Length: 252
Ligand code: NAD
Image (cartoon, rainbow, N blue to C red; front, side, top):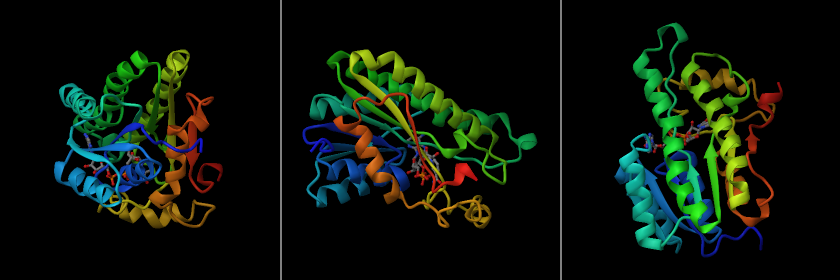
């Protein structure tokens, strides 16, 4: 009962594939209306269509989370359609892979613009509405890389940006809790998504597998109950928390 989200309005960024897509399905199945947001409109539309086929009320939106005007347009479109936002799932993120001494400033900025500036913009835009109504649940996607440095390295900007996600979550989570807004994050281990199957990261997967006590990569479905929990009233006493789901990898 306390895990149901009926009547709630949610959005998920980076929901056109991978973890965000799984989050959108999970929130919708728990009863929420879901705005499916992605950089690529066609991907958002495809996932919104999957949700509609399950009888979930959905809306597809294109937004680049690193652009303030896109983020405001996204929030305005959701409010125009459904009146408010109760659940903000800030999941969009990128992972560029290069040795630290070769990481270009452009790569560094791009990573931080999506992974951290994007999250700040989304938390602020959705947070203003939530603070106004005295209720909201923000769930950010961080990473196990916020805690440990996964082998092999070559992820300087990514790891640093995800550590920033955790601190942003802790700070907002404590600042806003007395006004009814809870802010938590989920730190997945290595999840089998298009990002991981990309050309650049595929060679690393075999190495990673031997680092995971669970003996396998996570599937996006392994994260679904966590996002529903953090979006629901069952987690109302939790804020600023980093929920790590990594098959034990950070302990080895
Ligand atoms: P993915 O690359 O498979 O999907 C990400 C989606 O985000 C894509 O559909 C992409 O179009 C969209 N996107 C990219 N930039 C965007 C932007 N600027 N604005 C809006 N949308 C944008 O990634 P994933 O593996 O599903 O990862 C999702 C989140 O989980 C990311 O924040 C990632 O860092 C994090 N994460 C992933 C893993 C993993 O192993 N896959 C592990 C830990 C954390």
